[in-house]
Image (cartoon, rainbow, N blue to C red):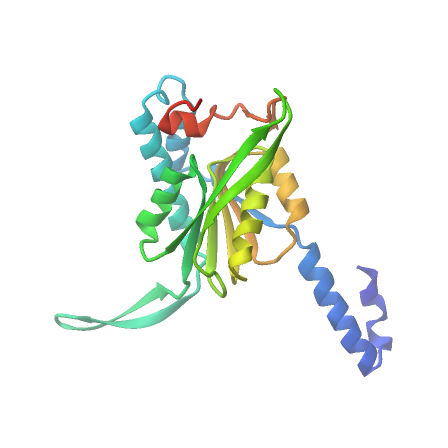
Length: 248
């Protein structure tokens, strides 16, 4: 960032132009921060292990519940970054000052695999509004597909905190398009992208296409690659089928 070298030679007009350029440059070139919760030791790792395990994941009820629990843990971790202020709460014996979040949260979810993940977030962020987007792979042949979005139901999201949940980030395209669809409903103050398992390719892709200081990506695990069918390796298989049964 060599433009800082000439800072002392700028007149007032040039300095204003410099600040405008510097702000634009910095805001649009900061890589999206990624929070990989697998880097911390917690019970979250057990929940992820069970949804991966072929000896456990066939139990669809347990699979859905584990995805919910991952959503609950992730909601708790994300909530630590919300904006807080002190409120006075009347108890039977006096007044208790309590720090509570000021964020107005909207949880947006990609159907259908995202439903139990969404419920986990909603269990903790129970005052949140909700949004739903359909995003699915429309195959052209065995290996080629495009992401199709045909449905969106969302409140206005202006000046709110948007959390977009999708259990699996294989290529990152579904998350990118779902976010674009939701942004037609307004301009949120902060955006959290949340996934359970992401491929490294998807993480790299989203960091490349999303350049904004108020977007962060939260994942429970990052896997090294995807196969020719764009399934995450080692991944867990098809999350939607495991949660709700195979589709035709």
